[in-house]
Image (cartoon, rainbow, N blue to C red; front, side, top):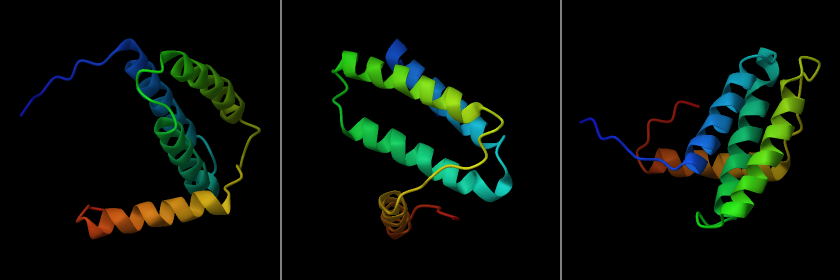
Length: 107
């Protein structure tokens, strides 16, 4: 079934930033990629849940902030990132919920 979703320009910008962040992870050392991936997933999830879709100015602000932060992480000299205990706990609870609901979680 091919369902074409119409996305707003803002939605496209957010998805573009997320894809760019995921591509950045591939440029990092294999030993730290999982930390970068967790950092990205957690950051996008918490930011998305902290603002309503109608709050355009807040989303635009988060996009600008995210782009600047991503430019920093894209620097080849950045080899690792810090992951908090809260991020790890969030990931563990998300993974457990995913597997309980019958998701195809392989992590």
